[in-house]
Length: 304
Image (tube, rainbow, N blue to C red; front, side):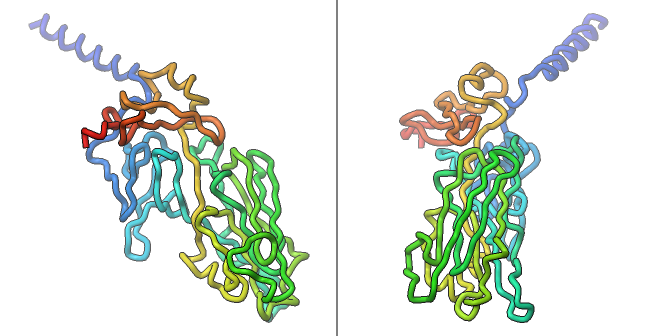
């Protein structure tokens, strides 16, 4: 009996030691984790339930908005997630700057314009797929990153009258677009108060500024004369975030700990260095499809 007790105690000690020294990050999510929020698929490494995401930064909230379940990253509604591209599209808030005929001054409206992720966040604003859009006939706005890159850019849009405007054109007449640098996880937007709509408010009372997905934008002259631009999706437009496993600098470093924190768990997966700041993502190797972040997640075409 004493031998049996000793064996049980030894076994318990071994289990505790194994748990203590088990490699962090190697756990896989439970099969009970929800992978859908409304109409949006939530693939791992993302998750909406406790313990269902790779890191805290990949956790999303599934909320009911207008009677429908929708995923959110803080205040930003998530539209879709691409494992292959390493991108997430969310709805960003438009900043409005309008002339008040009663006070004779310009006033901001809408939610504060900007993004405030930390340096440890998985997300970076896509420098390839986004542009800083400024809309108006007498508008000057800035986009600044006071936290990370120190970048500050400007957008200016002008026109003398409505006849100057052309649908689909965004080259400074009624609309301008400005590129942003890589590595941005923070930005703020401000209009210059010295430039205002006091002389043109009868046909252009409001100016707008927002960082948004270029592919989702086509300038309309109605954006100048009506509130059509801000009146869609509660004053929100798509913006693209590049995401990656950021706490590891590169694939070379990540592969040194394949039995620990390495996120590419499928045997048919490959590591891809992030093109927007440090970190990496995972893709299935040629001929395979699926989720490279899960063991056995990448399957050949004949496995479907």
